[in-house]
Image: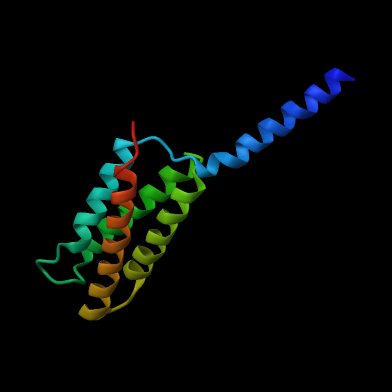
Length: 126
């Protein structure tokens, strides 16, 4: 009987740990952080206009890279952030003949989200 009770307690404890894991911050990842910095910087650089196709494609590439990378890191919260960024960059990348105002607003949104993520992720300890 003791073994059964001990087994149930152990299973419950391990199940609880896996549920709590989503609230424990991931360790600092310099690769991920570097790509996030690149995306943040590109989002504000517009010397040839806000709708410069090469810059939009670079942002979209980095957003997809971050989505793919985070998918396998087992941190659902981070993956959701990158999914939101990816949705914005994909929408911007696929838009036909967008106006400068549209591109500027989308890129400013990308910059805002990435800046907030950088602030949070930069506080993680390695």
